[in-house]
Image (cartoon, rainbow, N blue to C red; front, side, top):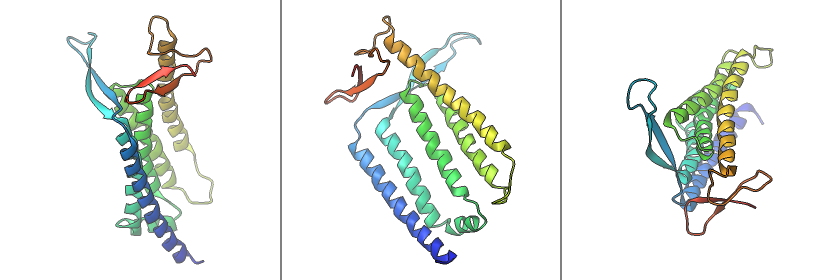
Length: 217
């Protein structure tokens, strides 16, 4: 199979994957319930150093937000196979694939924000920062790929830079998960249900309710 035949098959593959991701996104929306996570904001009510009041800005429906991840992937595949095919093809022939980095900087950043919200991070400033840090980490990969010659040894300075961003992202979500578990297991801060002695909590979804209950397995 020559190169042009391979590229033609790749274009059809992108069309197929775009349609598949779109169908998956529609299915997720159709099967999701009304469970939503709050997004909060803390604003000073006085001079600097004054403890501000935290208020709920809005709620983010989890099901449609997860579906948005699939819709972003679907849009990327269809754009690659359609109006941006010439640009995508030219980059592939040069040994580069910028489109994957651009798409993943958006979809994975959304995924990280949702993971952070599930662990208890709700402040809008923290969520925006996590989105930006994760997107930067992915786009470092694009910058690393841009000046490189395929098959030759290249500097990994940008790779180490992205590792720093990855560590910050992981630290934020890990610390939130740890604090969430400690709050759940503390006698003074009881959640609905309880945590088991094995330190693992299970989300037990009540029939007919959109809110999760933490219970022992």
